[in-house]
Image (cartoon, rainbow, N blue to C red; front, side, top):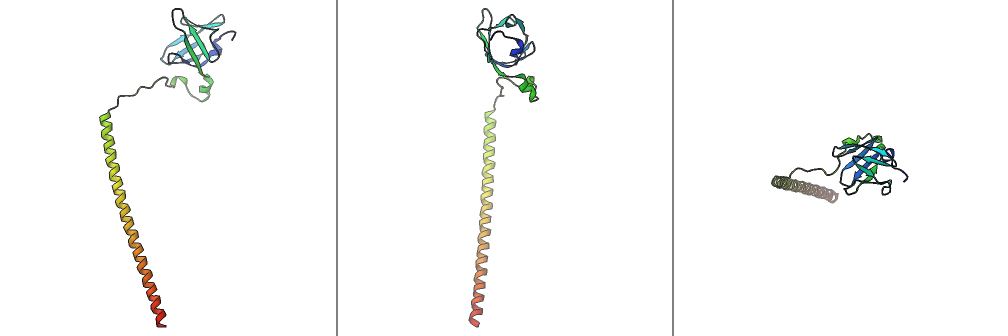
Length: 162
């Protein structure tokens, strides 16, 4: 890489400290709400006292240096066009960990017990319905068998009288 330019780093980057950085024009917008102006200086970029290291950066990773600080990195995530082409506004994307509310495990346990009781009742109801259907089928088969026997007896009676 001969030089870093703002145009070349436009896009979405994952910051080594966990936030997401969107570079659009000369602005770097962080997912925590901070926004900084980017400036080109020589063959590098400056941002709030940080300087992009040309020698340590690649197309996929930018290394930021500041005297007295540890180096920070941005890892390339995607082009702005990827989002804009899909009709997605990058500022509406939730970044980082989502926080969950506290769970009321006693209430959840009561709900599970209630659901289990309802499921047991439903299984019992279905079993009774199945028994009733089996009984109806059994009676129907018995009537069919009796009708067949009566028909056979009638046919046998007609055959013996002739």
